[in-house]
Length: 403
Image 1 (cartoon, rainbow, N blue to C red):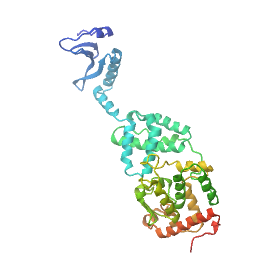
Image 2: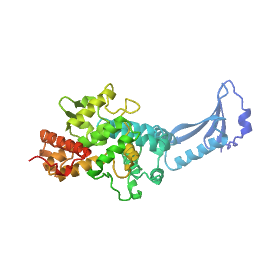
Image 3: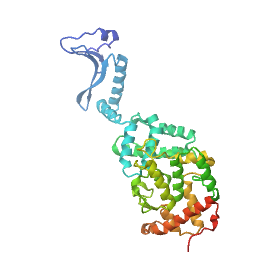
């Protein structure tokens, strides 16, 4: 019976000197310290799996201590007892550690940004950079657990940002679905996070004031420190009925000011179909003024970094500064426009097309490709004229559509 090797000691390791050929100091159970001719001391473990002799490396002494090497040996022998090859297990673990959450999330974003509207791509990246990367960005994606994600979303909910928390849950689920398809994870830990979501109070998402209060709002807005670009943006939202994101991301190339038409391509629209916006005379006048300010830029409303658009919060902050926080938002002007035009008896199809809404009847929507451009041009000019009359003190209630 072979003699059992005595366990190594730190003093024996420290005093071991290099020789003319590499040699080994055994610690038992397959583990040994290899002393190379240049004096390096390397931890190894010899084992057999499926009838083949194999070796594991545990690192170099003293970076890996005797106690640490023994712990690695213990873990390897447990894997062998469970019928697993420690070497293959290590390869899989290294492969799983390769991708961090930020790497996978940015790859997912690049993949999807090609089919998203720019506003959607910007918003998704904003949530990633502000709420996710600082917390889990550097973590290997395969090591992230469901409880971690629940706690991450809870942090967002605790600051009262329930809408942001909802978006974060959606993005997390999509990123991990992408990682799952790539084989970077074996399961999606972000499924069903909405089951534990904080319930949001019922609120009016896009409040708007009565039409009669509009002159006072515009007067107050002009008296604030809001920039002329912001004030122009508010008026263009009123005069066109477009979504705030469609306006702030608009490049000058989409406008034909001479023809008084703004053509928004499908990739920038929520419904993914091109939208033609007739421009009343008042909107054309504002755009000509804006040309003198931002005409040399690609965007009509560039932000501080001219390559990016005005912030999505700029208009709402300006309205809040004018005293209308919780009473009027940029998106709320669409509701005001819809309420007033429907109340004045304009054709419902014209109004819905102006607002770029799809028909609730999907079959009807599929076959109704009419843009009603000329009808909408007359409707929106009547609307713009009525706003001028209102601000001048006329009785707008009497202004109805022409028969």
